[in-house]
Image 1 (tube, rainbow, N blue to C red):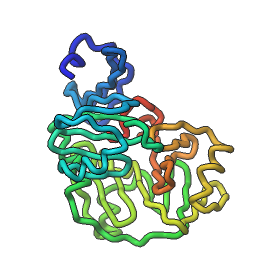
Image 2 (cartoon, rainbow, N blue to C red; image 1 turned 90 degrees about the vertical axis):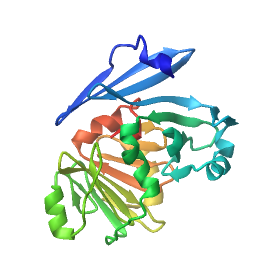
Image 3 (cartoon, rainbow, N blue to C red; image 1 turned 90 degrees about the horizontal axis):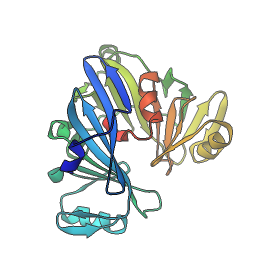
Image 4 (tube, helix red, strand yellow; image 1 turned 30 degrees about the horizontal axis):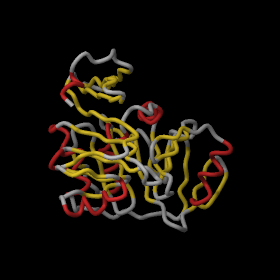
Length: 262
């Protein structure tokens, strides 16, 4: 992919954080569009979408055989695909398993961020609720956006792990992400008996997507349905709900930005 570093198109989006500048741009090459993400002028990720098959480690593979291939070549299954740490590669599989919805390469300096999910066995316990209450852009399941790492640690006794772009807490049922010291996103696992309450409506998790698609603005983003007015995303398999604050909303709404890039 060396060609992607040459004659790159003008930047489509620039987003600034505390001490950080992110830019996303694209390059058309041989009939395919590649998305290039930079952080403080360093190339962070290169990705492309809707790929039928790729050559990996000398083998031509498709989504149909990726599970078996990963087991034989030190790949790990993650939330919506597979990661291969030896080549800094993330493959996201489409819901129908007919294509790779995204193929992403990440820089060496991001290895901890991408790979800790598959190599870190340390999972903490925190009480899970059968009913998840959502207050758009304010809280989800009792986790309040904007809450500081220090305040959260004082209440729960859980320690925050340091990543390059964010700090996180992993539990057996949730993943909390802190940006610039405050809570910005919460990923929560859904069980078959989970209920979700939002704007006075209480529904089983399995029914919530169809209800919201009929009543709310929705953005289809790879494996997720994004509901920007509610500050949540739900995966197509109804296995997790993600709540986020307005800082993170701009990333979810930008369908060309890799989900793994914040």
